[in-house]
Image (cartoon, rainbow, N blue to C red; front, side, top):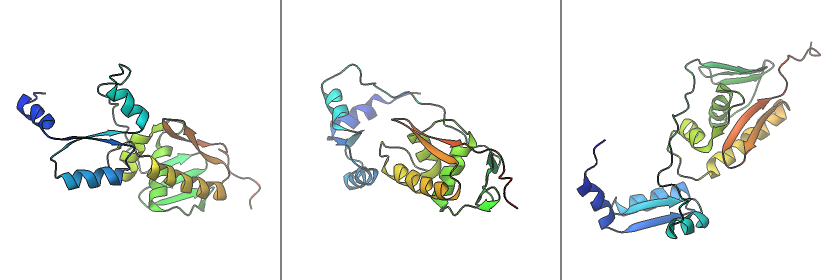
Amino acid sequence: MVVDSHFVRGLFAGPTVLCVGATTEQFAALAEASGGSMLMLYLPDSESALRLLSGDPSVPSVPTSREPAEVPARRIVACGTLRLDADRREATWRGSPLPLSAREFDLLFALCCDQGRVWTFAELTTHVWNRPYLGDTDALVSAVKRLRRQVRQATGSVLVESVRGVGYRIVVTDHSPDLSRD
């Protein structure tokens, strides 16, 4: 990749704004208001800002990018007796429908595509909201909270586990059909 040095110098010629702990909406509003005339850096918290400004060598210069996780082409995913049909937008537990919003369905579908895998905040934001992750976890945390409530009420056996500082994974503890039902 060839980088035009005049372009790079031009980025630093104008004002530089550090957005510390801003929400995605605040960051986007500032970017829109600036009309692209400012270099904007997002930092998730004041500790990160202090490390960056102090020249702390533990601050990575460029985060390493992972290959984006792929949601499989198949449109039906099963985790034990949890079944998700993306074409029909239906989720069922032991054959009974689960009442999920579109966002909850998309989140559960992504998590179930590779059961047990830890999905990062960035990967889930990209797959479920179809936008880049800017460090704001509020929307994802809220959606997970709603999803947990829905699956807990309906199944009691599907868990959305938190992996602190990384993301979430799905755990289905009951893989067998309920034989007590008639």
